[in-house]
Image 1 (cartoon, rainbow, N blue to C red):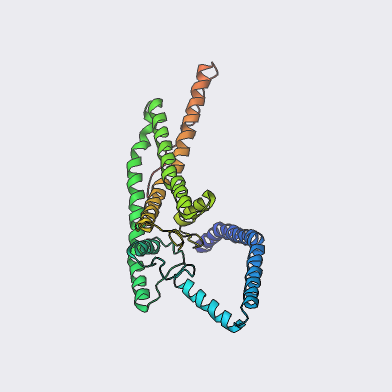
Image 2: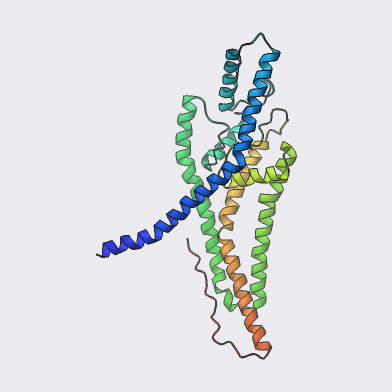
Amino acid sequence: MPRAGLCSRWGGRVLPLLLAYICYLLLGATIFQLLEKQAESQSRDRFQFEKLRFLENYTCLDQQAVEQFVQVIMEAWVKGVNPKGNSTNPSNWDFGSSFFFAGTVVTTIGYGNLAPSTEAGQVFCVFYALVGIPLNVGFLNHLGTGLRAHLTMLERWEDQPRRSQLLQILGLALFLALGTLLILILPPMVFSHVEGWSFSEGFYFAFITLSTIGFGDYVVGTDPSKHYLSVYRSLAAIWILLGLAWLALVLPLGPLLLHRCSQLWLLGRGLGLKEGGAPETSGLPRPQKIPISA
């Protein structure tokens, strides 16, 4: 009977969450279909039209030859070769690009626009990821643990003067604001300028990258018509690592900052009632401290 009760309680918690999860996926699928399907159809129709017009302009070619050429282009694209431009395009496997690729492997971003094509490269990628992914997770967890250890000093903040409490909140807010500026605002502006994107496209790339979704529709340093600095993609990889580290630091700060603000508001409200001559709210609950643990 106790085991049946435990299963019942577990099912009562999991089933609503599972239902909400499935409904959320269905909602996303419906909205994405409504937003993207028509654009896909237009792109497909345009491609077919351009292919037919190409055959009409070059009558010496037949459709089979064109289909074979398109297949060659697709295979080159899958292997990371941009079909635009010529053979002087920069290599996808110079040191800077390789460093960028290594960063996308250990962070599990995996844009999908570039992958090892040799058997040796594929085997090495498997073992490299087996070691690199846990190393990356451990590094980020260590940063978060270090911050939580530092924030344990703030658990006794209720015994400090109100001015010190306000300064601590302002310091946390300033840290969040500067981090957002340096990680999520300035880099998209730089990427937009270098790549010729709009700011919304640059911000979209930054968010999709740092959230490790990594669609691969926007990737820095892949336009053959542009001349990039040799360290451009390496700097982008360093930005990814710093951005993920910043997110690991910030995630514990959000709830803490909201909790501290609510505490200050409650304390200020209590002091205001006392100064206004209203009955003292001696029963005002003292805000509880958030335990900062791993």
